[in-house]
Amino acid sequence: MKYVPIIFCFVMGGFIFQQGDKYEAARERMVTQQIVSRGVKDAATLKAMRMVPRHIFVPKEYENEAYDDNPLPIGYGQTISQPYIVAYMTEIAGPDPSKKALEIGTGSGYQAAILGEVVKKVYSIEIVPELARESAERLKKLGYTNITVKYGDGYKGWKEYSPFDIIIVTAAAEEIPKPLIDQLAENGRLVIPVGPPAAVQELILLEKKNGKIEKSRLTFVRFVPFKRL
Ligand code: SAH
Image 1: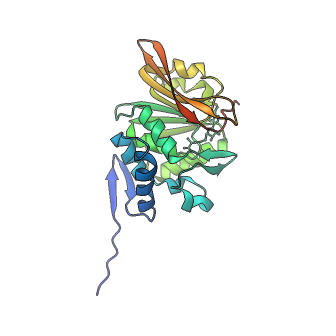
Image 2 (image 1 turned 45 degrees about the vertical axis):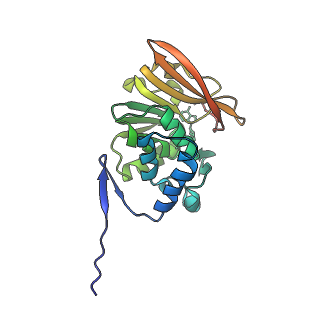
Image 3 (image 1 turned 90 degrees about the vertical axis):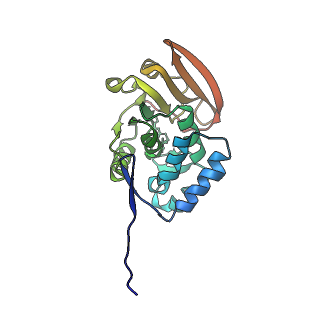
């Protein structure tokens, strides 16, 4: 019998992924057991969580733990967030294919990739130069042409490309950086963990409505500290 190897590829939103990688079932379990079960409903967010190969974003030695229900170390004292938190923050940010997003704290690039699936354009800033370089390379290899990463202090935001419809901060700040509030678009949404380092922080949502800021307190979280250059 003749055996013909076939590689299935498909194009989704302009990105090419190989279907049927060995973690597909683990990814599906992650979505149903950790994310849907805790109340995340946004279809685009769930689709992105089912699509993005999280195991590519963690160090080789943690590859088989990539879909577990916890954060993982990514080197330089930093972590990739727990899958549920990534999905929750994405949903809260109000994803839409017309929107432009800014992320502070690129880390592995995983949250940026999820955002890249659900909005038009993502800008992401990382303060550890090695992580900025590695994540930019990783995202490029995966085919994301709508994500731009730069090394720098995200406190100042990225004025050149502002205003942003969505701003997601993935490191815990003691207070919300003023430049980020200024760079939020009208009807924009900013999601940020606020609180002391090495303690429990509160996830805060800021919305800009008619130029005014509305604040909601969402839940308690634990993030690595927001640093300054
Ligand atoms: N979103 C990341 C999670 C990274 S952890 C992911 O999906 O993997 C938070 C990251 O924020 C760390 O990489 C840390 O170096 C970075 N960070 C901390 N303070 C920062 C700042 N002022 N500007 C930009 N990045 C910062």
